[in-house]
Length: 359
Image (tube, rainbow, N blue to C red; front, side, top):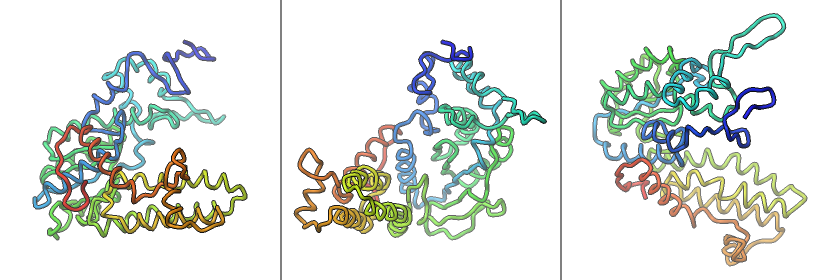
């Protein structure tokens, strides 16, 4: 079906998101299965975090290390030729669409011609997929080295292996990454020992890689270190913006709108990420504080204090006569257990319950 200017568009094209008959979500998920969870995977962040937590626990007394990878301005610098070639080779059904959307467009400024030859097109819903195609060759080569753990979420990667293997991984990324437009950013890469008792320096210190204590490991915004670290991590990332937004809700003249926003946008939904990725025992104090904050704002909006009985009813769904102000402490354990179970099935791995922050 041609578009307004006569360019071919895959059929059907729904709400600006291209779909082709030759390629489905299942095929994409299978292609990147158990390596890059950035595309075609439901709950990808949770899968990566839960899997790494299990690996850290199983090998806590080993001499293995964790290397977290970060590339410099990855989506804007990735080689367009590299991901277009990889995409067309692996999924020929995307060839026409890819060539039309990602061709090296000429940009004119009335005096010079600039060739756009790097990065995925901003706003392209297939941008993450294209990036993963460019990275896939390096991911496969790292897998051939036999790491204990390797999972990526688009450009964020974590690899657990012995020191010699991790050094080979670093050399591989430094040597072959630039040809793909993937340039390591040592200042944001991290090294940790799985054995918390180890105090020796990072073997890549001379490369600028930072050393992170085992107790302070985190990935994709999920704390995987000690309970005290998890508490402070949640405190720093959950409360600052939420408290500012909640305070502003009290200033709205329309109390019904304020209550609606509190319930749908600034209540428990703000804590869902930590509810599903971090066991409640690691941040129970913060969860209780969050619930008290929601209650305080609700009382301010309603203009009346809520007794314990009234607050318990307010936490019920509206269909049961409540206000839908669900409490984190009531649902966090179930959310974490559900996420842990779903992620284990998605990863097709066998995990052990955590002795500290596990289900």
